[in-house]
Each structure stands twice: as C-alpha cells, then as structure tokens.
Length: 110
Image (cartoon, rainbow, N blue to C red; front, top):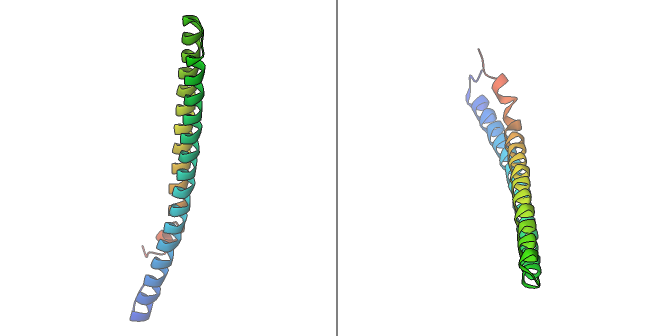
C-alpha cells in the first residue's frame, strides 16, 4: 500500500514504465499490420492487373468467363484469408500490449 510521497512517486514511475512498454508493443504490432496490409494490396493489384490482361487477350466468350470466374474466386479466397490473418495479428497485438499490466493488478491490496 502507498503510505508516503516516495511510494506515490515510485508507483507513478512504474505505471509510466508499464504504459510505455504497452505503447511500444502496440506500436510494433500496428507497424507489422500496416506492412502486411501494404503487401496484400500490392499482391491484389498485381493479380487484378494480370486478370485484366488475361481477359483482354481472351479470344472467346467462354475464355473471358473462365478467366473472370478464376479471378473472382482467387480474389474472394485471398481477401478472406488476409482478413483472418490481420484479425489474428490484431488480437495478438492487443494481447501483447496489455501484458505489461498483468502484474500490476496483483499489487493492489484486498
């Protein structure tokens, strides 16, 4: 329990240290998510461009429909796969950001 001014200063210092660790962890996680999202955007753009080229070079309606169907299926699977991955990364980032505070709650008197 905090009984004096020095104890309050120490508790404040510890709280600030915990907050900074939490912020650093959260910041790193968000950077990783941003990099992943940028990579996905680049891949998505490239696959869309390739699909357009394939559709434009098709010689029959059947080939156009086949190329378009293939693109839509791969885009759908890629999008939901990426969203699952980003969701898992965000969950992990949040868990890591709150880990420094886990020990803090055991210090309070009952």
